[in-house]
View 1: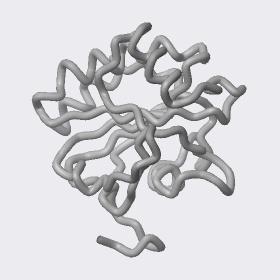
View 2: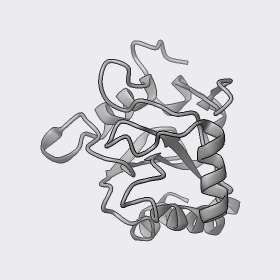
View 3: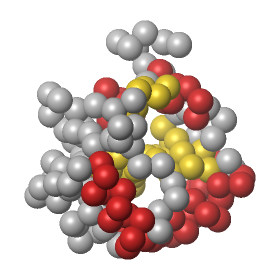
Length: 165
């Protein structure tokens, strides 16, 4: 594993589960991943349905969606881990992993999200996430392939996902 100061792949990071337990993302090497910051009270929240559809369609081929709830944009994810999970289950029947809440911008940003933004800057080279449902596609080698804007609907990513599978 690379040093934390020099991360090379997603395997160099840990993420927190909703219960606060840390898990190594090294176990995700070999999978195609779509990492997304999410919120329950956002205009893009209906994208949960498209993310679930992608997950169900491609998971047997080695694809995973990993959602990171985030409350940094308009306080659109104010709930507890339990409330977020219940909302996602009741409204979208989500079966893909929901991680613990994270900060994606600022000094408190998760190291994973700092790395994602550096590997795939946004429009005009921006290193910040502009809103909920920003998506990062990661190849089987654990490297970032592409960043997608919140307005990019999950179904529009299918060809890129298929190319990596």
